[in-house]
Every structure is written in structure tokens, then in C-alpha cells.
Length: 396
Image 1: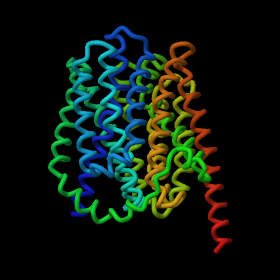
Image 2 (image 1 turned 60 degrees about the vertical axis):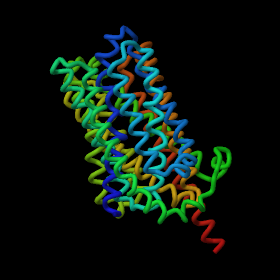
Image 3 (image 1 turned 120 degrees about the vertical axis):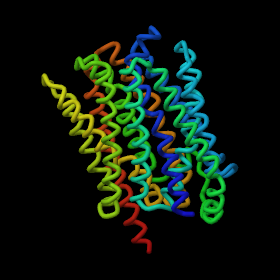
């Protein structure tokens, strides 16, 4: 029963990743068809991420009332409906309307599953579960690229991924009885969790630092994924279909990196995984931005950025109970998700404005600023946690 539930959670993480990379792959074609500026992709992602902020902050209450299984199944159903809605949209306004259930479907399940795994599974499982998110995020650009190259169009790409989501939804609803017994077994632990509001959480030493770290990480990841194709097409002169495939390599780097990290995470530890990951991200950004005449280094750089991103998100989440206490983890992870989605909401459209009004060539500079901020905040968090541990030891 334990192994079967773990397999279901793997499927749920695939469903989380599937929609995340579609818009970036299709947008170089979509914005021309709709006759809107390039930067309007940021508006759509802002609406999607805004929905995830709302639902992630509500996830604690929703999960306690309905259970993680039902929340997951309904959320995947909402995203499937939204993806189909994208495929039949004839205007930018319709895309924005369908972006609302798109975002609401992601936030609650993301926070609930991440907290569950952080509490009851090892770092190895956290990395492998997020690896399955990367599987979904890497598959969908290939689907979109195939639809574009075959002449079926971007709408067919959205319909194809919506069909996969519907199949996953059916599996999740069928599996609902499996979620009841493990939830009941673990319920005594969750019931003791402290309910913290945002202001109470911010008073805990280190919380502000981890929120900025998460904000910066999602600024890097989502901006990289959304604008990679457009940067390659407009600044590097790569054709649209090839750029869509190149962009998927970023997500493949995340996926493969998390698979590898699963084997070494328990020996290295969360702190060093975060540190090494950010340094690799910065190296990849340098490769993307090198002013050379070949596209090979930019292609390789996207893979390197993905490999660097791989351990950061799972390690930050998994370290939350040890950094801030198991009794606070559910509330703080929900707030962390909200901070992460705030980065996803505002930073990609901010870069869209820079691309429209300055140059899309600023792409690697923008990414490097947030990578440096992420490294600074995470190192300060390590110092804060160490001081707190020493103070607690002295009291004992």
C-alpha cells in the first residue's frame, strides 16, 4: 500500500510539471497569431501564478477538510480543463480567463504534497518526486514542438497535454481509497501542527531569508523556462521549432539532475546541495550569455542551468522541518510556496517589459542578478540556522 501510494504521488508530480513549460514553447507562434506584444506572455503567467499564490495559502485548510488525495485529483482536473480551454481560445482575453483555473489547480496540491513528502519521506524521495515534475515539464515542449513542426499548430499541442491530464485525473480519482489509510495513520502528527499566519512566521529567525531564496529561485527558473525560446529566436537567430526543442533541454537538465541527486542527497545533505546547485546555475547563465557566434554554448548553458536548478527546490523544501521545526513546517511551506509563486508571478513579466523596451539580450544579466541574490540569502540562512542550533545546545 505504501509503495502504491508513492507511485500515485509520482504521477501527481508529473501532472504538476506537464503544463509548466507549454506556454514558453508555444508563445513565439501564439503572440503573432493573436497580434499582441511579446511581453503579454508575462501577463498570462502572472495570472496563473497569482492563482497558485491564493490556493497555496489556502492549502492547509483545504487539505485538512477534504484530504490530500481529493485535493490532488480535483486540482489536476482543473488544470486539464484549463489546458483544453487554452486550445479553443481565440483571443488573449480568453487565454487570461482560462489562466485562472490553470493557476488555482496547481497551488493547493503543490503545497500539500510537498509538506507531506518533507515530513514523511527522505531527501532521496523528495528529489525523485521532483524529478517526476521535470518529466512532465520536459515532455510537453516535445509535444508542442511536434505539433508545430507537423503543421497541427499550438492548439493541438495544448489539446494533447490536456488529454494526458484527463487520464492522470482518472487514475487519481480511482486511487482515492489509497489516500485514506495513510492519511489516517499520519493524522496524529499533522493535528499537532501550529497554525501560523504570515506575520507570526516572519518573526521566526531565518524565515525571511528562505522566502527571498525561494522568490529568487522561482524568478530564475520561470524566467529561464518562459523566455528561453524567445531569446534563442530573437537574439540568437534560431528557428522557432529548434528553439522549442532547445528550451526543453532546460527542463531535461532539471529532471536528470534530480534523478542523480536522489542517489547522493542523503550523503551530501540539503545545505550543500543548495550551495552547489546555485553555483552551477551561475555557470550555466554565463554560458548562455557568452557573445560567441555559435548556438552550441547557449544550448549547453540551458542544460547546465537546469542541472543547477535540480537540487535547489527539493532541498529547500525538505530542509524546512529541520530548519524551523516539524510543528511549523506545514504553515511555513505554504508561505514558502506563496513566496515562490510571487517570484513566478512578477519576474517573468518584468523581464518581458525589459525585452520590449530595452533588449531581450538582457536575458542572462537578469538571471544572474537573481542567482546571486539566491546564493547570498541561502548562505545567510545557513549562518542563522547554525547560530540557533548552537544557542539551543548551550541551553541544554
